Image (cartoon, one colour):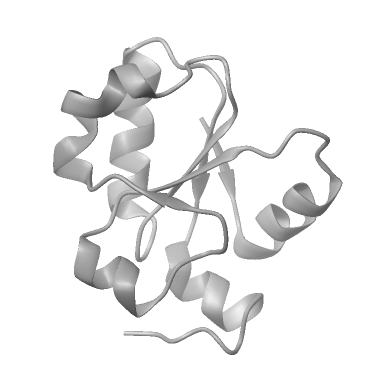
Length: 106
């Protein structure tokens, strides 16, 4: 699993040919407060039940509030055979502070 800062992820998203899946693993109320554009929500607790809906070959960026839950989900996905995982280090909190300064924080 790779660890990207908010600025590294922003550069990666601007330069990649195929858009990765932006997988937000926070709770619905958190996602309602703020989210990175084009991200999808699957709360951490639902990942095991929904893992079959994810493409193991696709690059997946795992996102949470500060990067802790997302790192755990990234490790879980790697153990399940996913090989192209990026954890957003610092989560949406750092994304709001470094990339999208108009984004709400909590």
